[in-house]
Amino acid sequence: MPNQEFSILIGGRAGYGIDRAGLVLSRILNQLGYRQYIYRDYPSLVRGGHTFSIIRASSGDKIYSHENKVDHILALNQETIDLHRDKLRKGGTILSDPNLAKEEGREITGNSFLIGAFCRTMGIDWAILEKVFRRSFPREVEKNLEVARRGFDSAQETTKIAPLKRDNLPLLTGNEALGLGLIRGGLNSYVAYPMTPSSAILHFMAAHAQEFSLKVIQPESEIAVVLIALGMSYAGEKAAVGTSGGGFCLMTEGLSFSGQAELPIVIVLGQRTGPSTGLPTYTGQTELHFALNAGQGEFPRLILAPGDAEECYFCAALALNLAYKHKVPAILLTDKTVAEGTYNFDIRSVPQIKEEAPASIPPKVNSYEHDEKGITTEDANLTRQNAENRLQKEKNLQKDIEQIEAIKVYGRKDASTALLCWGSNKGVGLEVGERLGLKVIQPLVLSPFPIEQFKAALSGVKKLISVENNSTGQLERLLNQYGFKVDERLLKYDGRPFSLDELEAGLR
Image (cartoon, rainbow, N blue to C red; front, side, top):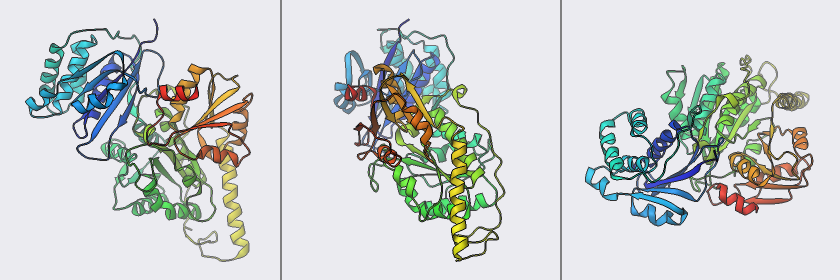
């Protein structure tokens, strides 16, 4: 049977349940066995403004990105139709009944009406909708089912989404997968001050704190966040923190303290469009060099950039264990697209994870140069020896990096043209690479950089094209330090990720 694929856009005013409605739709399609990806677009407002989600579903293999062209629009208001009509493919459908929300007295119930109408239009059984609704609405489920039934009965079947005979895979955001990965790696404490796009990790950890015996703390600032976590690290606990660029700025002195005092910590750095506040709810890949160079002085750090839910899970557990094995800070460099995108998660594809017991932290913590007993020193020989010890840590960390697939290769392995992608661009690059017959190279580890693995990945490549969500080619600049050359670049820096159709058109 040929691959059946379609995209749905659902939109309306921010604060009226668009994200929830998109997830409910996705869960319905998941019951039918379809693989999916959800892209979310919303303003930095609690209420008002326009928000929408695009759900791309496929009967084929796993998918990792969205397309700008859609087959169905579910519009909660006229603005959604006005803004997105040009995205509709020929023969597509628009479902809208803005009067219903007003009649019911709650705009959010209009979502249920449209979901009901969509299910009838697409030949999806009412029993599947009811099952998902009962799991998705902890309150007022009967009210929402009543409204959904009205939508279902008001529509007519125009096509049939065929159920697939295969396992359902759970739907997770990158943030949720990352949180589970930290727990898998033995996390004891999570400390954060809310900053998009990492805020959802804090909410997820708090919701499951009792289940996993976690300490979850939200202090008054990012400075307090990093210092509390370092104190927990000193006490022998595995600790992680989450933030975005603005919060990471405040953590940099704590990061240096980690490097000097040998206090391991994991920092989740969720990138968004900057500088300063920038576009706080949109995406970017603008903090690579900030992460590489943050903090005063010279000290080793581990930096990983996961590109999908499975990699968020794996990298989180790996970062936690390597940080505590080598007593160094580790940074998980995510971005809004991978952090808040929703994927089908397949635990079977995650590499084996070996949990390391945290090494004992000797009572020598000091932000000054110090001797092995923790006594402050300004001795020249000891200062040089401490610097050399830190360099050795990086070499030891490099040896562990060589034991994993730190540079991933996809697509046509013998192709002479390769795409270079990192972070969330892994998914869209992978899909376009397969369509166009290109090799796709994705560095998963960015520091210490796996030079030999990258050389092997470049075997047979005559043309290397970098794909990044920044204006300066930050990964390209990193590669230049090691003598690698990028031939062409395709950069996007408007706060929006590459869509599948957009990247394909740009490469063609």
